[in-house]
Every structure is written in C-alpha cells, then in structure tokens.
Image (cartoon, rainbow, N blue to C red):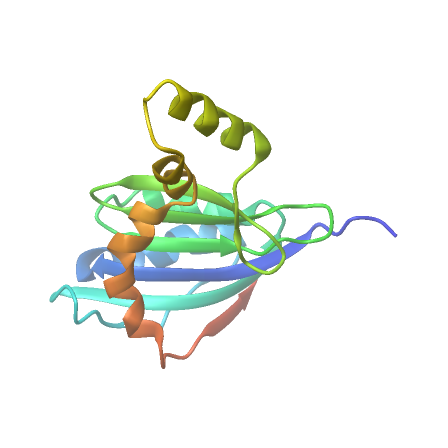
Length: 168
C-alpha cells in the first residue's frame, strides 16, 4: 500500500482586519486551486476585526503553503493545521503579530510532538544554564502562541466550518 499524497486540516483565521479579508480568501484560493469564500464573523476580542474557520482538503504540504500565503498579512492571527497522514507528519502553523510564525509538528491524534534533536538541544541548553527544560519544551510546543491565541479561539466554540477541497 503506497503513501497517500492527500491531506487536509483546518484553518482558523482568529483575527483579520476587515480590509484584508478578501486578500486572505484570494491567498487561500491560490494554494487550493479554486475560489475560496469564507463565512466571516466579527471577532469580539478585537473590535473591527473578522474571524473565520475553514476545513480543507488538498495535497500533503498544502498546510505550509496556506500558512505562507496568509503570512503575507502580518496583522492576521491564524492557525493552519495539516493533519498527519500515513508516511507524513502533521503540522500546526501559528501566527500572531507580536510573536511571528511558529510550526509545531503534530501526530495523528493532533498532539504536539517535540522531535528528538530538539529535545537534545533543550537538554544541552539547560545544562549550560541558558534555559530550563520546562521553558525549552514549552517553547518547542508553541506555548507562547497558544497563550496569545486562546482568547481568540473561544469564538469558534459554536461556529460552523466550511469544507473546501483542492483540485487536482
């Protein structure tokens, strides 16, 4: 049985200025290969901003492409999740204006994974007093991004998800 080149996941646009919502849709369309029209709603945490969620299906690696496309608007808070598939790690890309972008590897259950080489680097840095093991692991898992995005995530507790598929 060969490895699949199909993947999918979810995009959470946690906050985007109204002026860039169409640009975000165009950027997503360019990666997925078809027109994307999101259902935008007011983001109560940041008045004047909009939020949306999109479940997507496409090719392995499209998650990175989607995150790169949205990253062009630095004042947009987002997460792009690409689910793990047989033979391919999953990823969660998080972005905030104050922290920038961060990629975290995820497993098939959606849990953050810290690869062995990163763990060894954290252990080496903790031995020299440059960081604690706890802070190194928290950083590797994107905890600062999670902390900043948590207030924005509450908006999705009862929202609907739009499903879109990549062509080809």
